[in-house]
Length: 157
Image (cartoon, rainbow, N blue to C red; front, side, top):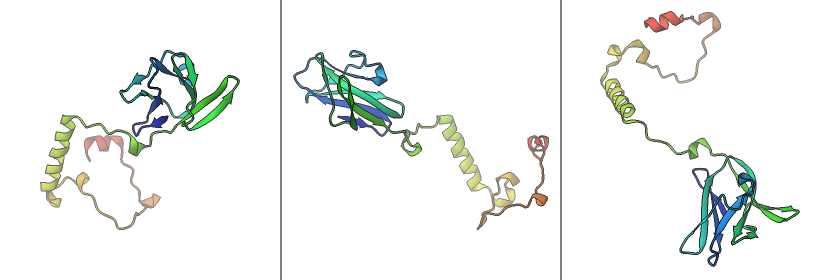
């Protein structure tokens, strides 16, 4: 059994309580029998977790030197040596990506800025901080646009 976790990693699970050594071999590790050793749980399930790029992969389990196909995987692919299990890894969507906590200094600056803006009256705010809410988006006609030079922006004018 193979499952893609919300963080994008893939967990392989193989039930073989009597086995003494189980690995995962596939095209993602050059079909090397010993490079991805699984860990046995007390419940008899062997587990291995890895991060793989989005794509389609083939794999099999190797328990005590015997190759096994995972019929509960995403699919099967027939080869000259038997059936390989197929794993499909989906790309991680932005809303699924783990969000890291911002550094403390950034959090304190954000809080200071929020406090400053909350207490400032519109007439005392610098012009660049005053935002007008428009009911509908408006486009400025090319003839009404003004070009502001980089020097003017840097000078604050």
